[in-house]
Length: 164
Image (tube, rainbow, N blue to C red):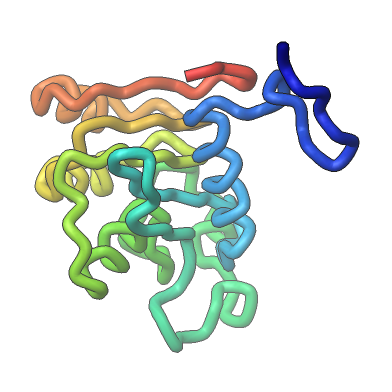
């Protein structure tokens, strides 16, 4: 016979699955973004443990885009193009850098990201040994898709309410 759930305890029916849990944290991380165009969050997870987080924005101790303006926005550069003129790093890049900075191996980990990674980030994720990518939204990047397929990295789009 099971014990009744007290008012202060959540029902196990409401308990999020692992993907939902990590994606909700990824969204919270993305709220730290300083990008004027898109807030992106990323976390690296292995064995159901968070290894590193990252959000998009200017390098450490440099002025944020909110202070300097956004050249890509001012020149109406479409998403996924001319990343080299942006002063910010992508969330995935920052998650990889933070892991390296703190000496944390991310080999065989899963990247959770609010956006599907671009081809620049995909090349870094391949070399970092990422095993899987779970993303919520994104824009098409045929080169990223080709590289991920060639590297045999599993890619899944997160669906709200999944119970994995």
